[in-house]
Length: 442
Image (cartoon, rainbow, N blue to C red):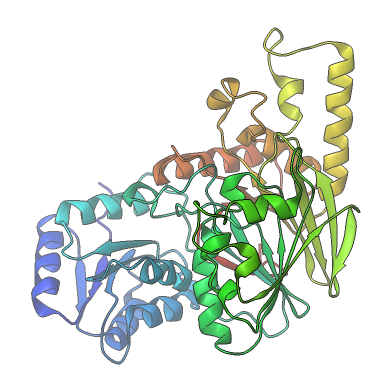
């Protein structure tokens, strides 16, 4: 028999702690317990439990501190941390994941739910590793953080709590620049964080939009920095098929859709339609390439001295056309030759990137039903990244119908593809709150 996993319970509420400890021991788990955070950290480092159930609100040493401290210890990387709290605020949940938690449960916690979470995080080869978060990145080093990873529509709820339910938004800090990639619903949470960070100090921010489908701009009306007069926001993007960028962004904030127009916000907002495929944001060199997605849609590649980040949140690789069985697509020689050329162009564009964040919305079975929709098939994206010798791929634009377990399974499959090909590509599934510093450790 496989030995039961040791669980450490850290909680200053003796009644809650006693209930959880008793339940786990009845289930056969070896259990350690601590009544406060510092004691819990000592027990964790001494015994290295497989799972920690940690209260958020404790005096002297709260759950955030416990998570950050243990995640800095390389010997605790494999430990799963479940934060529990009597508060259900979204900001607390996001902060817990950013600090290194693997899951977040609201009290009162149903014991069976806790059991399900423990099994999901630890049983049968779960691929969700300890998050590679850095609470305070090294001074001067470029870093990026995921604020929204979902595609099409926000999907809040228990089934998506692990990877997150907000639509696309990524924060990048590099060479003194604050750059945001896309303005999905994750932008609202980023706005709260930036408001707390800058306070009344002026903020300069550049927002790069891949395109203006609503899941990529819907967070803009709720972005707090827009409503402070000292802030300067530059929005870059390309002209849409029927309306200019300025018109599209202003329209979604016009009455009756929103009470305050974009032209009326206190911040200094500059909307700039791009015409060139290369430009600079401060000292950060940016290149763009057109994505295979309906309308005018681009991907960005940001170059820093420590490595580059390529961002293609909506894209259907042409590999799908090249490998799909005959009869299910136009297979004329000219179409196949076009697909090969487009694939080669994208491979060269992302070649050698330190980081590739790319649309992997469908698995291979789902993709057959969605050919031509403009979204990526996991198998094709992994093949593309390996051909381009990308160092790390982040699965992105998670389908709104995919729960955490499905994304876990897709991540396992992606890694198996690399192993089968004897490749060196590292793969993660993008998760809200996860922060990475360049150059990546692996």
